[in-house]
Length: 379
Image: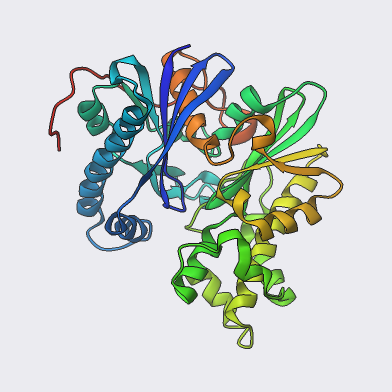
């Protein structure tokens, strides 16, 4: 089967996930993977650009090129480690880095919805010499959709099973769920925050990148009043296709709610945030007509033992496991999804699922940036 590279950097901005995938039709096999670091300076600039600020166009233009070069290096490092020549790869599918996500469900039709990812695909194609497919989300938005989540179509193609009702839950910075009745994709939507608030809170209070294994949160207590205020966010009243991002769930928003919780300890805040993530995921699943008997988790949240324990409690009686039980490592599902989406684009096949995003119909997603002889030392 043809080879594709999938590149993914999510809302957590922890690293670029790279996957070499053989793809054809509904078949996708992850052959090798690589985690490419993002320098702290670029992480800081991504975080700054994700919020309104001065001189945004200039800063975005520079960061777009820098991230394009970084994504290109990530792809080439993956191939070097796999001993695969770039000429053997049909295409790179790159998600890019989201710096703003304002879909129609958030703007409430007062202005056109939009989503914006950067990481210049021209630079990637020029540096690697590999045809690059990028900007997957905006065609769906143009067709009236949310532009997210896009992984459910991949989940349906690769992780479904006849006669079984399944939910695939991706817990990245933002969490989303895919609901499958046999091989039929019934729904998919963002459920709310995944790791983003957890990561930001521990970074601010303990200087740690993340709460590994959920050890800090497991030692605290749930503050029921704070949990209630968290769940009162207007996002949770939205029905039908919905998506969200750090624009809605961020540290300043959390701190506003904490003004009413002066006696709460930082550790109890972390514990309550875990409960918030677990409960919002479980409630989103239970509000749908499909009652899955199996729930499989992917993304960084799959490694948070405390979060998985709380999700298992709220998901009962469904069985909870990670996608490793289905043969796909939970760390690489999204990178594999963008390799698959690139394959869909190059074979003129739809990449979106209107039942998920609310788009007017199926669409071929992304722009194609042809490869060629790489420019050495491109910058």
